[in-house]
Length: 119
Image (tube, rainbow, N blue to C red):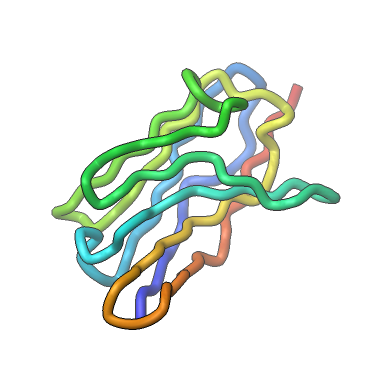
């Protein structure tokens, strides 16, 4: 079982920056993929950024060049640095962890943290 706790959300003006954190209850190197998803009111949840166990990263087109995903193995924490924020980035951001192997795929989710970008 993996527990995930997000933090760092808040209200920021357009053009500003925020850094979200996702603390895991296990060593993050036991997690195959960690990712950030977001869901805005009335919209489907979308993948924002992901990082694999090997350190490979991927981004949604809408955030590439503005967001940077990273992790700290000593702190068992994943981050996303969000720069040049836009009003359309307003959403609840959720941390996701995926483990595969030794049984079926297991997905774990954090409770979410609200990001509001004011124009």
